[in-house]
Image 1 (cartoon, helix red, strand yellow):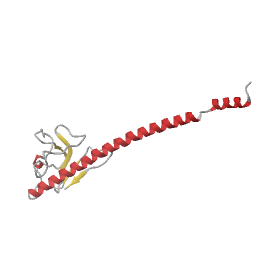
Image 2: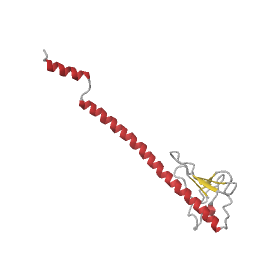
Image 3: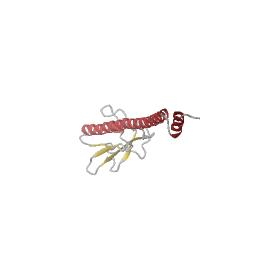
Image 4: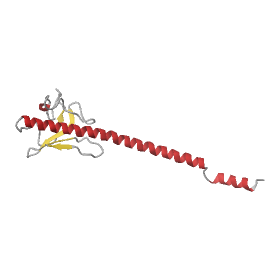
Length: 154
């Protein structure tokens, strides 16, 4: 026959979890939550780095266009259209259907047309350019991540 204390211990063990089991479950949930948070934060940091590169590239392109206009008595490259189109990556690639801004590739302006870290193609830079009716030039990076908008105007 079981003593009263032995009988009580047996019932407690059958009723719920031990402290150790609770700690193991809690630790497992904490580790999984931490891993998911790390993956999401790492992805955001990588996207932010690529967006920073895009912002820098767009600034370089608009500055080169501005410098070109200064050196050519206010004239902008004639190839810039009234509807946004992708800039050709240049350097001898086929620019069919793209905007050729190789006039900016010069030791005074650019060494080469910058390319988007993820959306550039063999021929296209991944960046778009447009001229407004009033002559304002806007260069943008449509491939941004996490909903960020990157564009510069001249």
